[in-house]
Image 1 (cartoon, one colour):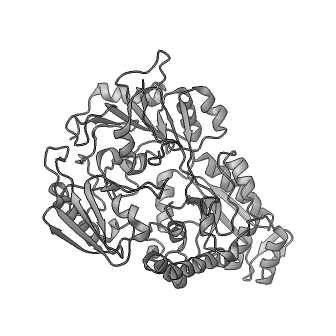
Image 2 (tube, rainbow, N blue to C red):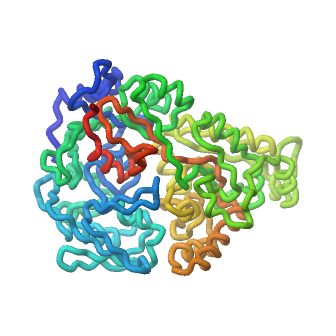
Image 3 (spheres, helix red, strand yellow):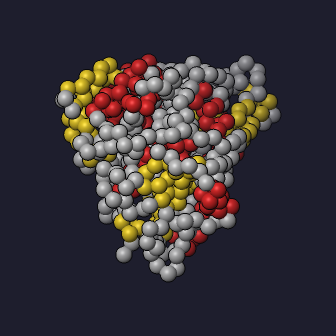
Length: 551
């Protein structure tokens, strides 16, 4: 349970941000025994405490400290999808042949951080809560039944979880004895978080969140005694902190990463293993101007992906080239024959032809739609997300070639996050999930299962793209046991994505992370890619338990 805050703790937390002196800062004398780790994001001030492990805008999830307090059932390695699943809170994981159910055996000897024993009933309660509370089913799991038999619980789903094994097993488990009395789990702030994880929340302030290691953790002794989670104003400030050694671990874009970070200290590490996720421009397909497929097509034709990689991402990621939106070479095996070799290129004149054929005209240099209205829209990304701000600025310049005025709006991240979910935008730059297949990428942009009316929070398909054909193909891909049916479904998904442009693929999104090996070793690497190193992911608990004092 949380320790009582003290002026000393608050003062230390403030010093982390205000003076740039972290508990995990650089130590020229060599490794520091028992040093803290400072983990950071560039999201601006931590204004409100929220420790709900399922609500996406809670401070615990956004900063990532939920993943040190709560734990998943198993670890799925998205860096190496061929690797076997590592059991975690479930000591045994057995899927049905058709992946419509999974049996989970509760690990023995685990306790919650308030001393209560962890049991199979906690797993059953968690999945029952998700089943009975649609707002918690952010992965669209569609749970139909939860049944306990001895120390094993079987969770049954309405459809196959073949492409969603990670989303099932990475669910963070909560204690029944705490959450059973919660009136609304979607709004519960959970100020005294009880978890099975290796750390407990010891202090929360608007400048820093402090976690302390447990001495009764089921996974054994922990090398790192204290974690600090801080949030810097923007990527520039975070980059400086990483380079100075004031921050030890982050998932953030760093321009000129070699000179800005790696060259500053031989212990600094930048690791960006490939995956199937991308950065994409979600557009509101329910309202002008993006309710018109011709306009979406034209915009897609003038975006310069090479420029995006070079300028916005400062050559830190590969160029996204396939019209299917799939990164290469990671996605090469999934590009269907129809689109092999078909690449995204800038074609301004071709885009104008598309618009003209759809009834658009020009008054001088200004594009006018078939209703006689000037075409404008607003691109929105949070202030401080420098690579995204640059990215949408480049897109604004690109559509100007069509006679379109695209304003760039940079609200605070809280406002942007809410507007994104509710569909209160015209265009935003966002990301897709990454998984072992292209399913997540296409589902995030086109799946009708995420479809919500404007004004109601959506977990993905933020642009409200409504295509029963795409939804059916996604469902077939995910549920069929026939390889030919799955291949045909992939062809349909890619055709709809290319021809109807539900969203615009902008750039590759590898699993970027930065950390230093000054005080601790055991981090994942190209030689040992046991998990991606994003500290905001449920799998980061594996890293926290693998770290050892540097020799």
